[in-house]
Length: 310
Image (cartoon, rainbow, N blue to C red):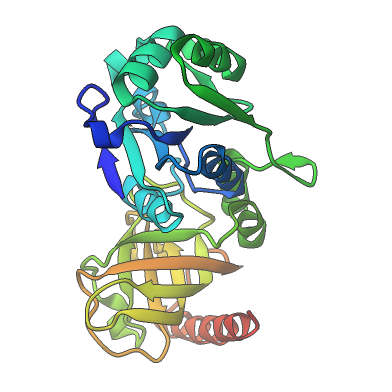
């Protein structure tokens, strides 16, 4: 997959794609519908995705709490696995934000990227002040010579499948509802970082990962599936993880600490993908380390049972 980040400097080989447009945070089932429509709209054309970095919401509200379901790197990896050939990861800045809807259609889509066809969700808005909608884009497509397909919104029960609904499910600790909307387990991806090694002292050595910039699911203990993506221990494992601020040990920055069952080895620097399968309990503060270890033993047994039943 090729990643193109500047619409004003696009080679001929990267023009002419059929592209789905959106932020694709989480790459959920609604996004998959849009991507499949793009794949089938012009099968002879390269399959592309047009997205923005940073997310426009981060640009307009840089001090708001983190909300992203996945990093740009994790999104790119997921899209590549889906067969995307061209990822137009356009820089969202003041210049991009100032474009009128017609200027976006003309300067970015037509003259810049040279798209042959685009697919958007029915709730798509674009241009300065989000003034343009999907029907406007269809009209501009007729003017500038590219096709437009509008994908209907996907519903699950009474709710529309959306990144917002997935965030709420994760905040509630409802990993299975999140999975139904995502089409896959919610994962936290990233490198293993150096921790304070308290887990090792307690008999539970953990692989620690940052959740900076990501939406924070409900704090507490989870049964998890762990993919080690590189290095000598590459493979799939079962485990139990604690997500939160570790109240037993003072004021701490929230992170993810994963204990991998029946594992021995050094994972520092390795890239992990940790799937949150079931929220076992909330974060707690114990009266003693002995009480904490007893609870960790019970958490591990419960996690093993949950994962064995998958």
